[in-house]
Image 1 (cartoon, rainbow, N blue to C red):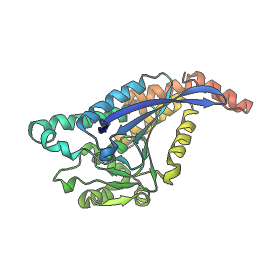
Image 2: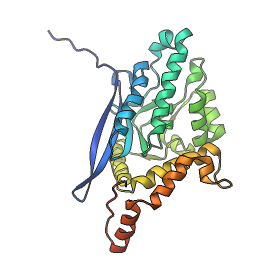
Image 3: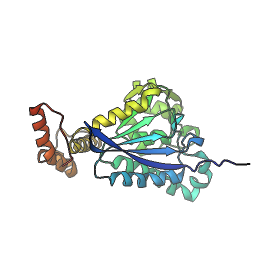
Length: 281
């Protein structure tokens, strides 16, 4: 007689090469929320594993993009694992748990290359927060979204709420938080929670094509663009102040683009009517 044991919840990573006209030009990383028995709910240990996963991927010198996904097709992430709340999120343990959450979000947001959340199935609470800290969100037409802290007597963390408001506006953020209702992928797209909805059967292929398209572009350009946009969002506007006054790092990256070999390669390729080969230098 054999007995099966449930898989240990985990955060896993993988790297895939990006090939352009037969030449490897970089890699695309993936972070997988792997707890399918509980619809990929996040345990405290899984939150703590996300910064480690981000650090591992970012150590790759030719990383071009990162995909965040859930294991299987039933769920992206059903939120934080409520079965842990009594022991880990009440009393003295609450601050430690919240700190692990925030460190996970900050690690995702700090990835310098484009990040894409690929959402199949359920995406709720803490799962929405993880997706909010990516640059883009792609959803299957079968995806469902909800922000249900009001069902538990909690408040959604302010950092996640800020990002939610930035995407959907204050009125829809309040409605999602006030009602804890579940919305479908079409509604999530209409309010701006996700950027694109595609058939579930083709979502993974579509995400792979999108990240491959990003990977073909100049890496310094993408890093600079990401940081400049994030700087504008953080400060409200950059129109009346010099970029360097808002973020010296964003200004340095912008200047680096003009001094890069990739800039010269891009101009040559345009003149020669060929596809550029960007090296990130």
